[in-house]
Amino acid sequence: MKREVPLKVTIALIPLAMALCAFGIYRGEVDIVLAKAINICMECIGLG
Image (cartoon, rainbow, N blue to C red):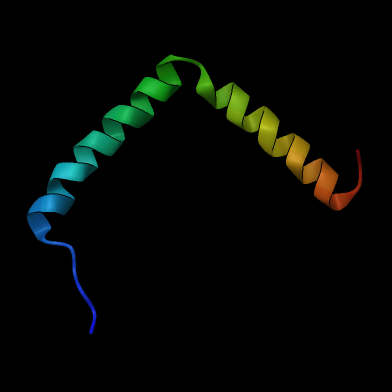
């Protein structure tokens, strides 16, 4: 049996997620995440 999330919960969580994303961008976390993603990718492919 599949349980679905109520629409009210979804509508409440979307603005919260957007606010947390904006806060992360404001703090400069984008550069950190991108640098870590590049390092992991280089290790997996074996280029680094």
